[in-house]
Length: 276
Image: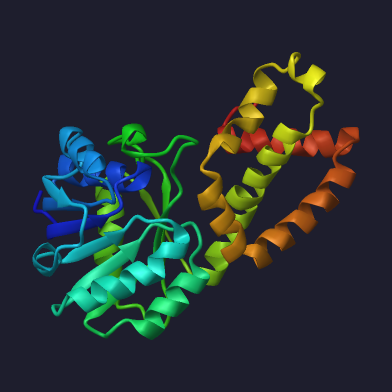
């Protein structure tokens, strides 16, 4: 199958950036994948794991200038500053996307700040792990996962199609959403559940933890995720998260009886396909 891109520059080589680089190369979605990370050791590991063909710890104008797609796989608060830096270092037209878990403020800022030669399309693959770093990356991370692509009145249709095809080529299930709707829905299925997992981890007294079994460990697994990244997510999507927490409190008041527990059981069975 013909590659979609001649060269992709991946800025950030952690779990998502590393996994995306591996998938792009395995699926021949790009002829060449270049990576940028803060540490030389990360560049070496990314090469060894097949995520990139070359890379550097500094953004290279020449490599960026040869790229028709640039992916920002950096923490949410770094997306806008990094995009502006990339814009200063380049002169050619290209497509820019990101992978951040919050879309509204990022898409709004970049549509306002970036020059017209840079066609920005927001992305968010609903895939991940409580683990982080290039060591946790995997080539099949996005297979079967919902991959959100944002659309606004200012989104270039051709760029959106190419970014959508990229996620599809590596096994993702593309969902097109308005950025604000994305933030509302993702707060309900990702951001609030993460806070619940963290709160449940802190709930038991120390003696109770000696009794914890698989259910408690399963429910609290994602509390191991990077707290700095999640602090940024909570700050950037605080309005929708607050609304989700209010809704959760309402559900908690009603779920203690048989009717509420049965309703939750049926929904979970529909979600997993485990119908009795």
